[in-house]
Image 1 (cartoon, rainbow, N blue to C red):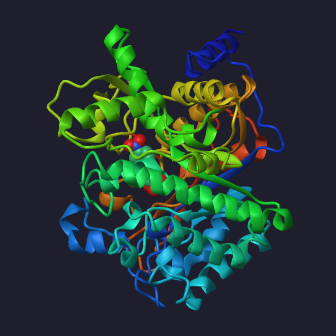
Image 2 (cartoon, protein in one colour; image 1 turned 120 degrees about the horizontal axis):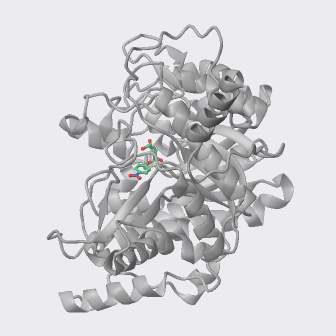
Length: 506
Ligand code: PNW
């Protein structure tokens, strides 16, 4: 009896304070998957006719920027290991695999006149291997790796990029629309434009602050919408697939309840979420009016002759509105927001927002400086999106956790459970979410962080010739969740050959 009480009390404290301990279940049609991206896993950067991407160029020119010096030249070598990757997917029992196509691997110069059959062969093989084992492919058309040749022409700030992307998408749809039911046009437009054009955090590291972020945003959203309309018009009837876009949406809360912080977070959400989602999901379309007003006013004060935020024409608003079958959400963490006190570069996106991000030090920290575990944020984000966009159909296209090396990744397993619990609560409260995707299947090249931050359910031994993959604890836990469709708080696999370190290795 005593031990029974002990167990009850123990369970109650291990469940999050905001949860009620009730057992919830993922419905049978809820889909589980894992994700990777071409540059981060494929390697083979110049093999079999692949063209140079902006990430090849950027990290070759700046090896000093990569934390541990490991770039994507070889990465996890999925180009040669795709069969092993599919074995892992089978072992996990996932319903789908989200991966991206490297544009310069299939169209080395970016344009459709010059198609690389060897490049397509790789994706033919991967897709056929997946289908053979009943794993559904979910393809991201663009995950950060623009052909360098197109960057030489201005990349996403050139309005012609809209046509370039539509032409590329047409080539890929022609090849694979009959085999692939889920399409994501672009991964994280906000990250591409803010970090790649307005900063040096991502390639192409243009750092043209205050102007290029917004030009890029307009073009990339229109590129997405035109590809959506292309599929809708020419492929949808026949193949019945869905096309969405993946946005980076973390939750944000005020640092504390001071009015200034509450106002700051409201502004932050308009810039961080509204700017990218309103044109597609809001009733009236277009960019949020607060964002339009703020940038217009600031631009005038700064001596610009027009707003740095480009306008959307009536036709463009129409094209964008409703241009997605689902909202892909890459959700990792929660940020705390306060008005900015630092002197920041003006003009810039950060200056337009006028807020500062604080990383909540009450939450467990991953191996990435920006990533802390705050699962309640996933719940709050879902409710916010439901209210603002009237219960959009969603897919969690990324959620994950970073550690250092080591197979005993208790922090990843635990974080995954807690985020999935939060998702179950959000579903119970009406969220229309079709599936959940772990980032990532395997360790890979975490952009500038190289291999110093590991996101894989499977560890990759980058030193080994064959880039050996080994299941971590979290792989076993995810497999069990997929099998049982419930979260068991303290479940651990029996007879696991992973030796537990004395200290949990974060
Ligand atoms: C995503 N943040 O990027 C990308 O889609 C992946 O390629 C990447 O490997 C993964 O997340 C892990 O970083 C993000 O600061 C990068 O909140 C940073 C943030 C979110 C997403």
